Length: 256
Image (cartoon, rainbow, N blue to C red; front, side, top):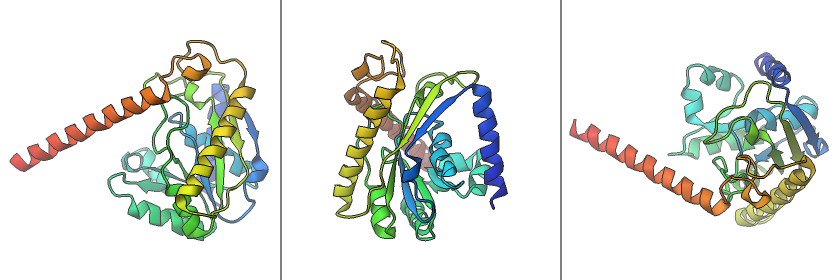
């Protein structure tokens, strides 16, 4: 029993009801009923992790320990909640500790949630994947559970206003068949990207109308979202700007 996690799930479900969110979940049978699993999730919006645990919960009320950036844990409101739910803080400047903690969770038979893309995809297409999910699977022996969400970007995503109340948004969640950790990390990562890409196309085809020009619709489908190439350029420019600001702060500290 995990009363805090259970209470958070109950609260989330009430909030989703208040928002009018409409969930369609498929592939629940692909989540193991017990034992470890690396839950690999595509990343289109800030609320993804709140939805990504639904298939596991439907499969015997299982809980997922999500890897999330350290800043969320540093927040005085969200931090205590994240720690109580036993999620895993990730320091992007030094990820060894979070990786070790994730592997230990897997060896204990937990489900660990990870974003192979690392950051939100502004294009809503799959970005290139980091190899962390594959390496965790190889080290722990746990299968990877490919999980794809479509529609969450309509609730809250990077560069656009929140749409949290009475949004009446449909969100589709599809879980593909588990990928066993066989082969090199590079081979497994490539296989994961392929599987999740196919599942994403499947959900998009089943979603319904993608209105032309809408910000949440990929350019490939006639929307105004940037292409993957444009989004990658925007990400690179943003990272360069952050690095420059960080260097400026550090230089200022040295002077003082």
